[in-house]
Image (cartoon, rainbow, N blue to C red; front, side, top):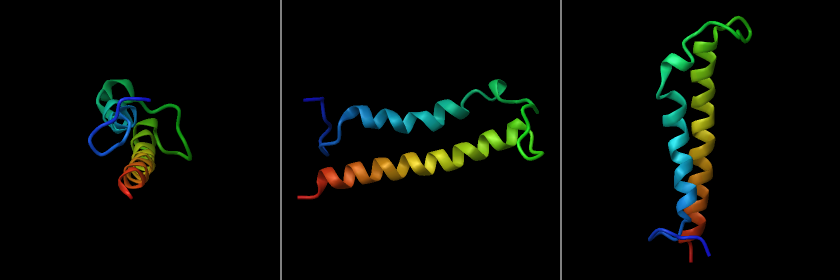
Length: 71
């Protein structure tokens, strides 16, 4: 059985919460204009993609923690 936290959620799922931080932490990696998407430079659509991905990650994490704490 994997190690769990007090809420009963496996610790590995908490590492999902680090992905948005790591994806946006180093702007020198995505500060460029190509590849463009629908005329938007990479710099802009990459950050907007992380807004959507972060929402999805938080939703998954919320559902996992809610399910594990429900009797």
